[in-house]
Image (cartoon, rainbow, N blue to C red; front, top):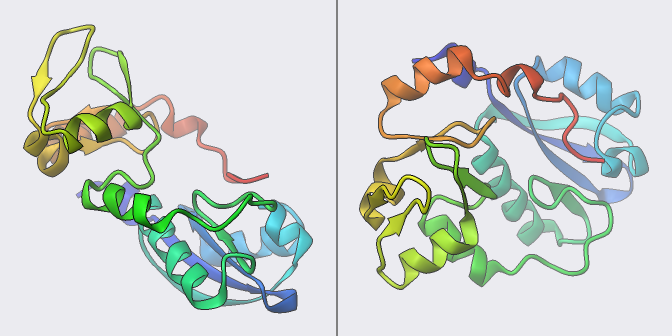
Length: 189
């Protein structure tokens, strides 16, 4: 398995004033914690400085979202930020019903897909085509994929969002993905 995938970590920080922050990193967790303590990180951890690391586990950006939702349900959405909900000011709680539909499709943290030909397909379009049992196709290269291939078998590069039909092709891609080298260490402002 690709070592770059094995280094992904989800973490939970306890913050001042009873707040929490859930993050994802491919760095050493103690280094990332020190960055948050120094004010280099998410706006939420700048507003409410971290007091401790509550949890650190191997995870992905998707599990970061799942962990964020779990903590929002437990401690309230006004007290937790992370993943897709990292902005300091949120308009309201997450739409849990809509999120459950996305979780069923394994698309919760993916905002945009790019076909191997480079054509962009939005998650919104993929979701509704899947929901209505219609095949998904790329308008550029005319490749059609049924919902089972999209949902169960395609793999995604979390850095450039290209899709791959098997793990071997994805691993080869990771070795030369130009976006992987550009990944910023700080994702939220």
